[in-house]
Length: 310
Ligand code: NAP
Image 1: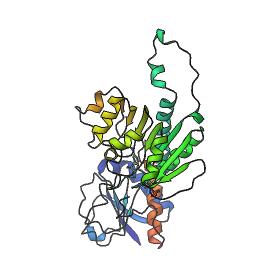
Image 2: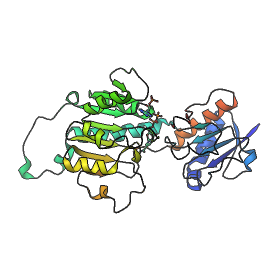
Image 3: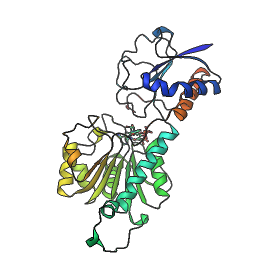
Image 4: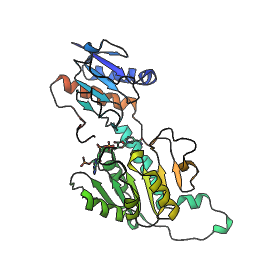
């Protein structure tokens, strides 16, 4: 049987994904018509990006699953017309990208690299540099990305605290959960990394109260979602010195508007949502494997829990 797979993620991405997907389908023994347009009632699977024009899933009566190209699903999870199973993207190359982004910025803070980069002749004051075991890092979210980041940071020897929704036991990480656990995790985080999905439970999680829990002068790295942080509270915490610096990759409005105070703030580093992107070669394998599982009656991987929102 030949499957009809609709690529609902735009022409530009189609050009990058077509060859890797066709190769991956072949490797998984799948016969597929990969199309950018097809009669809705004939579509078996939809490959989706939140920027897609497709917003009404009602006519896709035969569709067995929607496969999201991004890890975050906040723009599609609440769509009332989507009754098909929704899978998010867990791509090993995306994960590797996130590990590199976060480790780079953690080491930058840990080693005080900004001061060295901007050093002038009068700044010749040799001090003993810190070692990783003297620094504690907090990671909010211990999923595919948070856990990989924690494990990479663990190899340097940092003291690690993580926070997730469910209780966890992970060697080398002190795992917390629940409201009290969040307070403890924040209070230990000299560098705080947010790798949570944006849901109704996590929106504005980092408000003035939460930021106050951090050790004075802590640094924040947010490659999760802009809505996790209360922007005004963050600026106030930076201005008061409660927070030493913030590296932000994601924002409530993207691109970040030119007049947004983050651009001009001396203690903010803005990166343009580049922490980690889905890579066609590896993502195509993940998608093909999931379609093969669907066709063989096996459970789909990376299924989104709709009520939970991630
Ligand atoms: P994931 O595997 O679904 O992990 C999410 C983690 O957050 C889990 O540990 C989960 O706890 C925890 N969590 C969710 N809701 C919570 C709550 N209310 N309280 C406490 N913990 C909660 O997601 P992921 O693949 O790691 O991705 C995380 C996020 O990164 C994505 O949703 C996306 O927003 C962002 N992202 C950004 C970029 C970028 O380039 N900037 C790229 C990819 C992804 P449990 O383990 O208990 O379920």
